[in-house]
Length: 262
Ligand code: 6GU
Image (cartoon, rainbow, N blue to C red; front, side, top):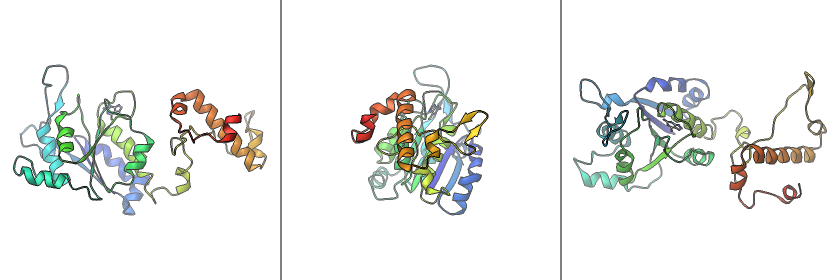
């Protein structure tokens, strides 16, 4: 998977050379390039933002700088120069088509489902906005060119820019690429995956007694059926208590007969 990231703080992404990301890059599973948006400016101040039309606080990222950068990284012709060529390229729906992702606190929530879908892409391009955001015509323009454009928020709180949100999404996406994780089974039974997404049951390791606190007896019983039932019940009750919204979203086939009895 090729991953391009555009930001005015590309150094944020130096950490991607560490840990599992570094290993995945060395193995050739992912190829990450962090670009500085200011490299596509032409003025002496390398300015990327301007005041909001209609008034208001803060600064908004200008469309022209982003477009020069994104045209190049997406391999699109600048539309002003050759409008027909740009449209032809954009309507190509072949595999390998890039996905252009803009972190945005006012966008739909990024979920495990999105992470799973995007883990199959060949090329992701993240455009990190700063300040009060980016000109709305940037995503609109690339959508009109037929580019697969997504805008996502990572939660109901405000960050200073898209960099941290991009890191979060990238970690959620790339760990699902086959071969990325040392132990692929560790991603199968996780919270938020599959049709019946529930919070996970709690985990314990040895010793069975520690500072007066005991591991639940059933986990020591050696009865796998009972252990599975205990864990499933705990996942259901914890989800109901902590995230009732997830229970409401469960598919009709998510609960089995035994679940209904309890
Ligand atoms: Cl994607 N961006 C910013 N700036 N703040 C956020 C966010 C994104 N998601 C939640 N808060």
